[in-house]
Length: 229
Image (tube, rainbow, N blue to C red; front, side, top):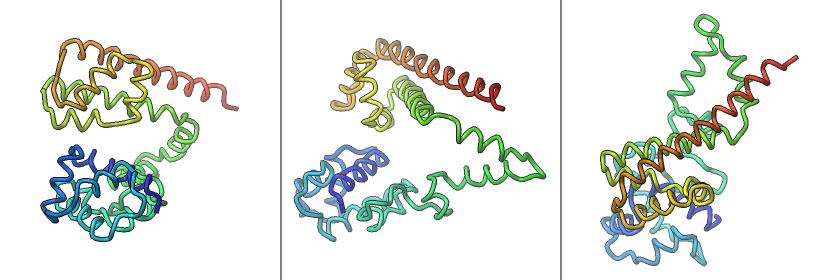
């Protein structure tokens, strides 16, 4: 087991729970009051010199399985310890583990490939094969931006913090929209909203930025179809 890989998975768990590290430690102490702060924090930060004990992993699993998050109820020793497992098992386990799609999406794709209904299998395959990888990144970031705006308007701090807690998204903002990054990172650290109206205006600019990039990639894709021989 790679400690950095375990740290990545634990950060994913915190994100799904909507907890910071202190809140997660307190949740672990419900099941084991004596568990130490370094034990949990070192595991989350990837600073362990040795692998966590079975007891520690068992406590983490209990926190996940007793949460209200349905996905986390599938957390197991295999997920935490096996470096090759990147996703959580769903009911449609084999397909989910291979491509990471939910049961609902898998069933919808099966329906789309049914000749008595839609028969869109060929064009879906063409689309998924040719659309560039960064299209999905921009689409995810566009969705996150819209979600952050909605949570900010409602001042729903728990949901807002959970949506901001995305290292890849924040890294993109830090490089491309430093002022937005600073405001969001302050919320992430302090769980307090400051300069709300200014941030909403900035987020609208970020949203339009991702929409432009997505439209450009979509246009390139349509051009590819026009030029196909």
